[in-house]
Image (cartoon, rainbow, N blue to C red; front, side, top):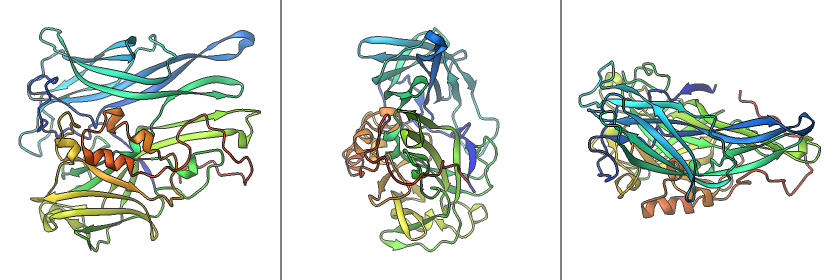
Length: 412
């Protein structure tokens, strides 16, 4: 069964970045993992009461961590295309100097912004768009640029309906994020986790059963299993992975042409999944049952995401001193900034893959977390090694118009 979870307070436990970033105020850390953008379409009535597009605006979610965040601090984001400013939006933040529970020493305070928007600032821009994120200091209202994201916006047509815009998500398929969840820590439901320590994987997927003109194929999460090895030696585990979808971290849209019949539509669907891997750590009483223990297996790990005996994805990471080690993208100058115990993993995807589509090395080359760019040779090589599977974008009338009618791909 696939359940839906909310990212919410997932990363209340965070440490400051180990690599200094000159554009971040001292003592603050902007979490790339918690940054999220949603594009909302607006319509208006045209001639003959036809619905026509009026443009789009963004919703922005983010978190900053630090011990001494001034009261009344906030964020501002500026949407640009080239030298032209498309929108400037100030966001009110929720501030907490300490989480209201304690599970570990040294947890900093945080401020978060939830789905900040201004739906009066509409644009019809397409192509590459940059988003500058500024910190607003609550003491003196000064602003500091702390991050710049790059998104790619496309427009697609719909029969008898207004055209719409969407953010291309294909590049996020290369972003595999792993997190050491500690018992008592709040999980993605904003509630206590299952009571055990475990390693969770966050990964974006375009399921074949939900994409294209005739979506067909098995549910990506159905019958999923995970097989891990360390330094080439398999770790026997019997823990059954727990699979969830992350609420508000998905996109599902459909282009249409001609008469809008079944074979004249193309659905684009991407979803962020959270998988409880068969990996645990910490005190024996806090561990997942029948799972591999990080402390017992230092070295180079590989975990295959499988359906039956067929491998679809593989993630790789290193473990030392009982903990997952930072990816080269985290230690590179200007690299990603992640909360404590959150790390990137190297990901590879099998070319012979009947469960996935819309895998695009060209889009993955834009970098993780909304186009931050790859800062390490390892990151660039990982993106370049991805296979091309399916059509990356909409609109995209398929080469073949025949074939059997596909299922609509509702999750089971």
